[in-house]
Length: 254
Image 1 (cartoon, rainbow, N blue to C red):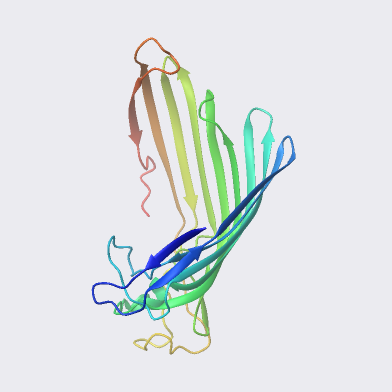
Image 2 (tube, rainbow, N blue to C red; image 1 turned 90 degrees about the vertical axis):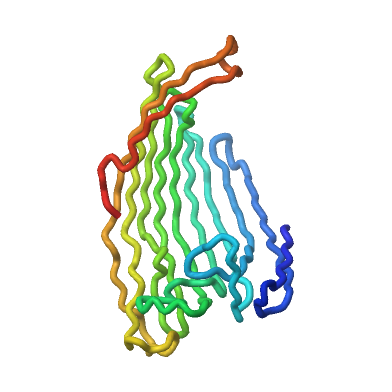
């Protein structure tokens, strides 16, 4: 359990408050190769502005942001020292600061508006330790992030339905290694266009904001490294590594 005390400062309105963030995690071995993992918790955070500016504090009449989280998953150890994890998660977001609610397509960022919503989905991870000659991982996330502004539903601009990433590294010998990293995700939703141009936030009629999804994005990064062992202890002694990387080798624009 974590406890935090929040006190307004620099002329901000509001009262002092204490937030308790309990977390419970359970791991249970169902068999030598199968493990069940369960986590649940509650997290608080102060209201944030449109962009997360370090040190910037804002006032919000809705109080602290709250996220109730629950995740259930299983881990399977496969032959070849390969580990697979499948996790389902659900977050209930309450009084969270939101770019759409505060600014939207009109970019009228004069206040901080808090909304409710949820985030849910599945995560799949297949990995093999990079200490092997051939190592890396493959991860995939399928998720949704709906929000509600009054009686209007929309998808958060952070919503990406599919996210896929993969890393592979191979030890070529003589301290030389080479690797690739690939990333793909569906485009996020653009900020909604309000039904009534110029209308104050929250005065829209029931229904859904008009939203368009931006194009999908992918990229590949390449890497080569050379490692020199210093001293006589091959395993525990100091070492020096020279790394050359080519970020976004596909020259893909986001």
